Amino acid sequence: MTWADFLSLFLPLFVAMDPLGILPAFIQMTSDLSVKRRQKILNGSIFLAGLVGVLFIPVGPRILLALGLKVGDFQIAGGLLVLVVALRDIVWEQKMFSADESGDEGVGIVPIGIPLLVGPAVLATLILLRHNFVFWEIAGSLLLNLLISWVIFRNAGFLMQFMGVTGSKAVSKLAALLLSAYAVMMIRVGLMSLK
Image (cartoon, rainbow, N blue to C red):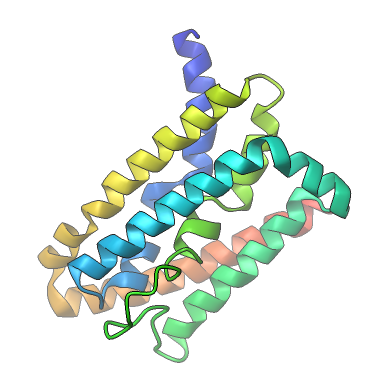
């Protein structure tokens, strides 16, 4: 594989996953949690996102075809889910997770792992990449992108310590607003693709 091939495989997934863009959402959803709890959610989210993404490479197109679904359907559903998460914090001032929650392994899978990390854009990109690359190349690029995301989110605690309680709350509200705008964009793109 040439350097140009690597970039044409890696960059579309990096842009679709957008770990820097969803970092504020991760901070917003986990800012009230302990470091240990946040790390557990992060590890579970990355693992499940990787598992779903890798399995979707060979199985996804068959599922879409069998169910009569389009990529836009994924975008609309994912956008609605993300919008609900954002509205919980903006309107009802409720975090998706609370600091006193038990150590449920499933918490964090939705919405951090799916649909924020591996959502409609990534799933659509995985399908498109199948035309030019083999399974192992696509899976390797997906896992590399998830590793980069893990490193970025793993260091989110340093940013939150730097901001303090007041700064963290301000960024949390701003992040919720940005997250709601991101959700609307997902829904809009999904609707446009269905025309």
